[in-house]
Image (cartoon, rainbow, N blue to C red; front, top):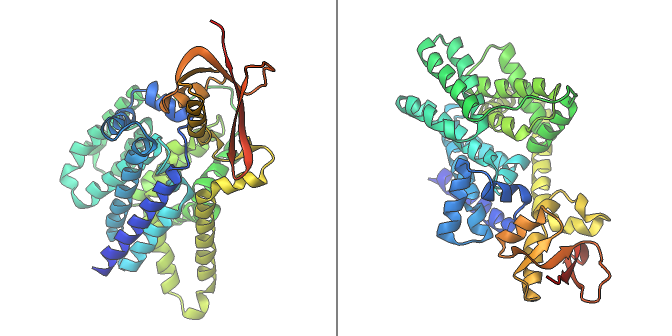
Length: 396
């Protein structure tokens, strides 16, 4: 009972933090493409949310937050197979919530959050309701292109366990996955290996990523290859191999490393507890340092607007692409402007989401046209100018 109350408390605090963060965000250009141009499963989920809950930021990001919270619950349940003590499972959940990539996936309208939820749901079914596994696998085809690597990892897993009938089904599903969602492998060979490692480190935080890499290697050497190892190792190896040739979208592969977290926490606490107290110092140091870095990262994300005060170039802010648009739309409405032509093509669909349609009656530019009828529109965060535009009425 106490464990459930703590879990509910963690979920509640997490939901409140996410809600407070979404109020500071604007829709990004990438998100408008998914909303207006692409017709994926996530597109229909977001569209349904906007239809039922209104055209606002909360309705836009609510499906991502809900999938994130459900993923936390699923992870807690999955961890029963790896962790004996309830307090270890709570630590796992807390660390998962604090991961930089998880915080982003919980808010940004992107398939990553949905893929994490799908993977955790599959792992839950695999561990607790295996009779439904054959029904679930074909349904996952429609989630996203990255689900192909679930089938690929499972093919290796079933081959190792000599389950050839299920392996044949997975091969068919893999072919269908690549047919529905083709994987782009093109361009002139160029090395992005270090860049890929850097993105992984940013998603998981450096210490956690290094430890996950170590867990995969350790399990390989000890020949402890459970299903989570096959999924995580397969995705990591393929992403690193592809990175030697081209720049890859790491968010396609990163969700698969999430499934190894219960095994990583199990290994850490086992290594910690088998040692005498006087030999546990370095484990405590690594844990405390990792936890502090994760908390600091969360604080940076939570108070990200304060960073503008220390930047000479606002566009260098790591969340700049998800700022400005909402405030700009409000500023335009204060000028009684409900439609405008933006010189920046990426700003146009963002303004559309906030009710400013496209027309040629007014022109929005960031360069001063030096005309008498030009009206200045300035957006400031923390007394720092982050956007300056000029609105001119066009003679049509």
